[in-house]
Length: 172
Ligand code: FES
Image (cartoon, rainbow, N blue to C red):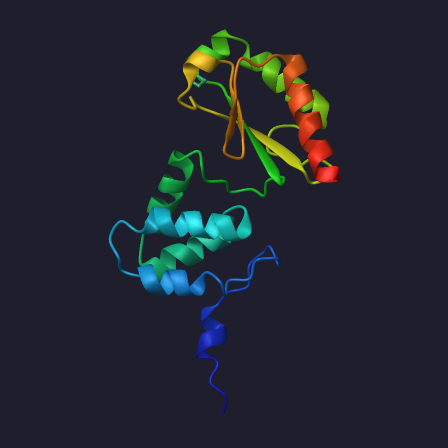
């Protein structure tokens, strides 16, 4: 009789695009290692682009960490996403300095340019945006980040220009 232990251990995820096999060695390596949760979550997000609930539950089980703790970490750190994102994720700072200097206008410009609400993916799959707390460069406010690039002293016009530039690069 064929052994099914391995396949039975691996659940089906709601997002059929999630192939757990590249994450298995990471889970193996960090299982039971204190303080490794963030590293594993980062690796998982790098692989899948986001961290859906069923994947988080699986990670919790494999690492022997309480699901509530995993959820707590994911919701505490803005780097983690529980929904799929566009290829370029825009983080719009809504911290105090940015708020005072017009972050609402920046969000409006992004929303209008892309035709999406927060957390939605643009039709071409290129962009999505999220509002986040202080990004740590208040002197440049209002600020947004796209990938690891920071854009400061933004206006509605400069936002449109930046997004257009990225679209152009993608089309090349
Ligand atoms: S408040 Fe926006 S970077 Fe600090």
